[in-house]
Structure formats: C-alpha cells, structure tokens
Image (cartoon, rainbow, N blue to C red; front, side, top):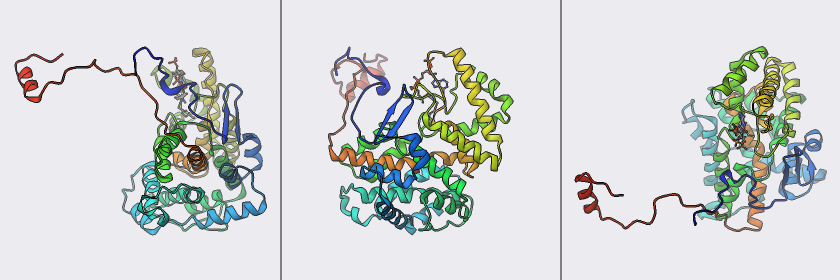
Length: 393
Ligand code: COA
C-alpha cells in the first residue's frame, strides 16, 4: 500500500464488522448480549440460558433449555485417547498450552469432520462448549497426580466442572459464583480472540480451527492472561496495607497494573461489580484476605492513576476480581485463563456461526515500511561483493 496512508495501530476505534451478539458501550460502561443488559443476565440467567441466547438468538423456554442441557451433558465426556495424551504430558505443562492443544485435537475425533469437511454448525459449537470444561478439569486432576473424574449428566456446566476437579458436588454458592462468572465472560463483541476466530472462519477453515485461533489469542496478558498476573500481584502484596506502595513501585518500574484499564471501557468494567461481590462472598467462607488485598489494590491504583494519568481513565476490568473469585473456588492462578475460555467458548462459537452466515474474507492492508524496490543480485555476486568488504546498499 502507498506511503502516507493513515495507519490505525491496534485498530483502535476502527469498525471492521457488525454483530448482533453483544454490544460494548465503552463510555457508558454498558454491556448487552442480544439487547439484554449484563446486569440482568448475571443476576437472573444461567450460563446455559446465555449459551442458548447467543447461539439461537433468543432466551430459551423451559423445554428448549431442558433440551440444551441434555445435549450439553451428553457431550461432556472426552475421547479416551485425549485423556491418555494428557497423561503423557509433562505435569509442568501450562494449562493454556494443554487446552489449546486438546481443543485442536478434538477435530480429529469428530467422526463428522472426516475428510477435511468444513462443517461449521451448532452441533460442533455445543460439543466444544461442553468439552472445554472437561479438558480443563481433567488437566487440573492429572497435573496434581490425581485420576480424572468422569463428568456427570445431572449437573449444570458450573457444578459439573467443580465436581470434576474436586469429586464433590459443590454447594449452591460456589455453583452460582462459577455460573455467574461464565455468564459474564460469555461474549464481548470483537475482542482480540473473537476477532481471531472470525478471521480464521472467514477463510472457510472449520470451526475447530477457528476456535483454536481464538484460544491461542486469548492467552496473552493484554487479554485473557491478565487474571493469573493479578493473582501473582495479590500474592506478592500479601497484605492490604502494602497495596499503595506496590502500585507506586510497579509504575515507577514501567510495569502495568494487571486487571486495570480497557481498550473500550472508560469506566469501571460493568462485569467487575458482580465479580467483586462474588470474590467478597466466597472469601468470607474461605479466606477473606484475597478479596481485601484486591479491594485495597483497586483503591490504591485508582488514587495513583488519578494523580499520574488523569486523562487515561484506567479502572478495574473484568480480570481484576476474577483472580480472587477463581482462587477462592480452588483454582490455581495459571488455570484462570482456561476458565475464561470455558465461558467465551459460547461467544466464539456464536461469532463463527454469524461470520459464516454472511461471510467475506477478512483481509486488511498494511503500509510498507521496508527498503525501496531494489535490483536482484545473484548469489555469486553477493558473495564477491561481501568478501571484498563492500556491502550492497
Ligand atoms: N497499568 C498502567 N498503565 C496503564 C494500564 C495499566 N493497567 N492500562 C493502560 N495504561 C496506560 C498506558 O501505560 C498508556 O499510558 P501512556 O499513554 O502514558 O503511555 C495509556 O494508559 C494507554 O495504554 P494503551 O496500552 O495504549 O491502551 P490500550 O487501549 O491498548 O489498553 C489494555 C488496554 C487492556 C491493553 C491496558 O489497559 C492494559 O495493558 N491493562 C493491563 C492488562 C489487562 O488487565 N488486560 C486485560 C484486559 S480485559
């Protein structure tokens, strides 16, 4: 492309497509899924209802929901070769590496995908939504030298996951907390991982390929990798009184405060409110320390950002209270991004189906910043020129 064209680094503010699935209104701090406010969904809907809403366009009635629950439960069991492959992995393997690899491997065991068929339909979406938590829970057990636990069909997605990691059916509070977490994380318009999924789907690659792109894109700490780092901060800070000094020292070293700031929201992330309540309630039953440090850290960061970057509007994002919430549910810091993937699988799948419903190859342009057009120099001549000590300009 010609020089002088305006480049939008990071595509900030650039509209690259349209979606009916969710709307992020950054300045107002509002998030809706198909027109339903996230606050209403977080308070009243289950993850399964949100899966139905995103995939099928409306909230389900009782029989539609019951049917969806049966289909999800029937798809939870992992192919044995996948479990065997996880047993063969080093126990030190990073959970996101395992998840990305296993999600990709699911394609091989899908009998309807044989011969490279580009089947991309709600059947596979449900298959992926059901199996992703099973992969995460199975690796959680294997890495701890425990036998994996088979999924149960009479539990919700959230309760079944907690059962698969602990062997015990969770109480209503833990189930509701994880269920709400999954609702909050289910979709977020054209975020980086969803965009990656849509780009891959736009080439007519199959849904497994598109989802694998999404999982890979999620892991970085500017996106879904942040909550693990938030937990590392909470562990390092150790007590609420140390929060402000930590923020000042981290910023002085040029570091970012993880879980703070957002490309779209210029207010506190609307999802943070629910996560904060859950972190507080779960902490009261386990150890209140992690919530208390997080609360002190948010206050300290708000004060310091007001002082040092008053025009940037940096506030807590969804990842901030994800850390104490998931930690209180018994997950390790390096598993948090995998939980994000369990929720976002609903949104990724719906976006892929939406992309394919009205597809056009996504292929942007770039300005060229390399050397000008240059005559080709044959290898022998290059050798001669360089051994004479002159370099080609
Ligand atoms: N800590 C410290 N400074 C931050 C910050 C944070 N968490 N988030 C943004 N900033 C500052 C940047 O240093 C930059 O300041 P400068 O202009 O003085 O250099 C300014 O705010 C804009 O940052 P930029 O990276 O251009 O904004 P963005 O729109 O790309 O930022 C994030 C969005 C999410 C990448 C960014 O806020 C961030 O890195 N947050 C921490 C990681 C995180 O929580 N990720 C999960 C996102 S849901």
